[in-house]
Image (cartoon, rainbow, N blue to C red; front, top):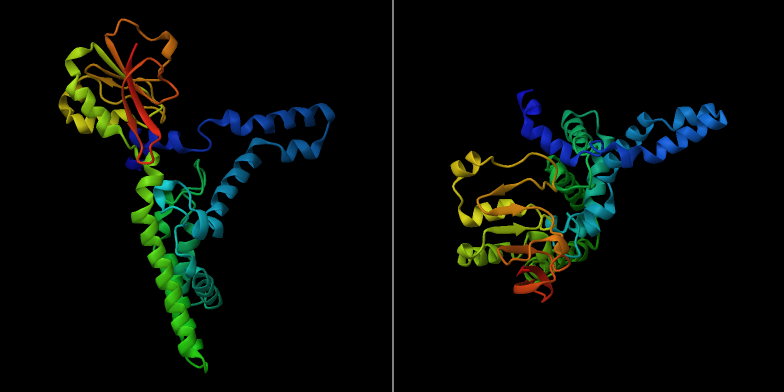
Length: 313
């Protein structure tokens, strides 16, 4: 109870909940409800109310976590998986389904009830949040998929062991597993850094390094909030004293695009280039779309595209 009432927990909930900003979610429902009232449509008044919208949103979020496409082919946020892969090995798919089938037909056993209940309960907490399906918010799925895969493999071995071509089938399965694993290693170590660097805040360390070297030249350093939660990285790489940071006000609570965070001469907010100071007393760190002035440093992603621009007016 203490955890759920903690302000930091509630702030995180407001930032990720589908229901935190109800206007976009309910706007279409409100318009339809008004039309139903004007037309005297009793069924519409029942089915277009906000409670059904919330229920539909929750159910859609819940079921999205059982998408085979998400699990085995595409994944979600690029941070959560290697390029061109899902969250699980594709070769696991038949074994997961087979294992799930055996759990269902043996549901009267306590172990089956435990795993199936776990499997069905896991997405509930993530269901009312945004950006679904979401791997991190459903880590509690583990190890149900691994258990089902193991059951599927064991059942498969028992079935194939009676076949006349068992060695061919065993060899084929081993080759498929090996190929899938080697492909994963190739994509993870060979491609992930190059292709997914924008999703891992690439360039923030270099930007902080530049501010360290030029700290005394400016009265203010403005960092764009278009760079994801940049204040965290500046605090870390600057090794800023936590006591001093808290004494200055600490982190302003709010959503993920908080614009009130600041410490020392650093200010974190959107950059409106045409309205910023032009006396060269301020340094601006932002995205290539925001900064158009005298660029002092351009930080590029590993693929050569621009990540961050540092400039002054």
